[in-house]
Image 1 (cartoon, one colour):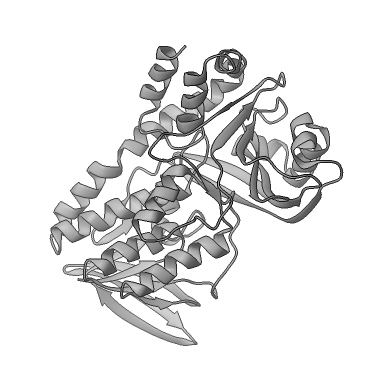
Image 2 (cartoon, rainbow, N blue to C red; image 1 turned 60 degrees about the horizontal axis):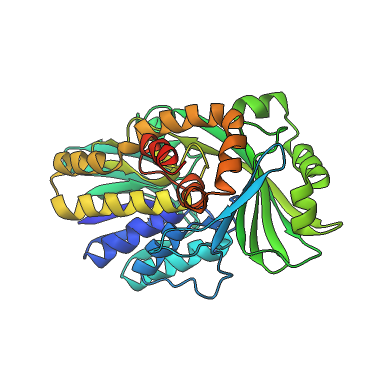
Amino acid sequence: MEILVIGAGPAGAVATCDLAAAGARVDLVERSSWPRAKTCGDGISPEGVRIARDLGIALDDRMQLPTGVMSTPAHRWFRGGWKAETPWGAIVERRDFDDRLVQRAVANGATFRPSTTVSALANDTAGASATLTENGRTERKHYDAIVLGEGATGKLGTAIGLGAFGTRLVAIRGYVRATRDLDPDFALHFDRALLPGYAWIFPLEKRLANVGILVDDRFSRRNRDLRSVLATWLAESPFAREALGPEPVVERTSGGIVPTGRMRRAVGAIFAAGDAAGVADPFSAEGIAPAMDSARSLAAALVAHGGDLRRARGDYAARVDVWNANARAAYRMRMVFGSVVEPIAARASVRPALAQLMSSEGFFRKSSVIGFCAAIAAKW
């Protein structure tokens, strides 16, 4: 098969890795020059670390984060760990992480074309075609299939009829130079001023952290200056002051959106993965590991069914449509979490099994939101 992959983020790069390893001829195109920075929380969950390792990418050179911390509006907190098979996560700037994935894709035999834009996609009877522009030269090229990994803000998915996303979250983050050594934790802080959103502190190094806030689009419409909201939280939160020390320095602040719950993920020979497919967790907004997982599911479907695109679409849908139900359930859970976080934290502080569950399932993607809620009740 000859396949075009659009976007060199985690979804596009991972799909390329697997497709090229299976023998497909893959063009991986990226509109930016390379490597490039990307607005993100940079959190590679324990599951993301495992997927990267499966691809041959070790993250052992990064600061390992074996635990997660959650705090509440009443300043109650607890710490938990991860599953035994995925004992640690890491924070890796996207400039570095995405480049590692792309290097692996190229090593597997793919062709990488940075600074290349795609202006139009079209399905036909035997696949799909794309208009590519590179170094001022434009060409129209046919492929057996196209993987759309254009991220959260791309327009190609809408143009081919993938439809709207179910929900939209908004984040702003900065890199913060701490004045004390950081604890090796993923930390989520549910401050009253941010509900139903949260703030995070994710350490990259002993004294450098990715710090930000996640809110829904209704909050951002009411509070358009999210940089000021983040600055206020850093100045007033006792957890921020304790974690980062006095007078931390904020650098490289930028914002972005996290779309979730797209109802269609394929049209003809064009398949969306990652943020373009809306697979980020609508509760925590974790996006990297779900993007990688969706990309592997898509690559497996294409490899399994070759040129039978109808069967490939069905196989891919069966693997990833669970995110649609989860998106609706997780969004509702976010709306009520502010009213239940206090009793959950109080219980988790004396119930290690509940604390473990809240870290390993609550922080990151949930295979089933209903199952997650049932597990909370079982460990209560």
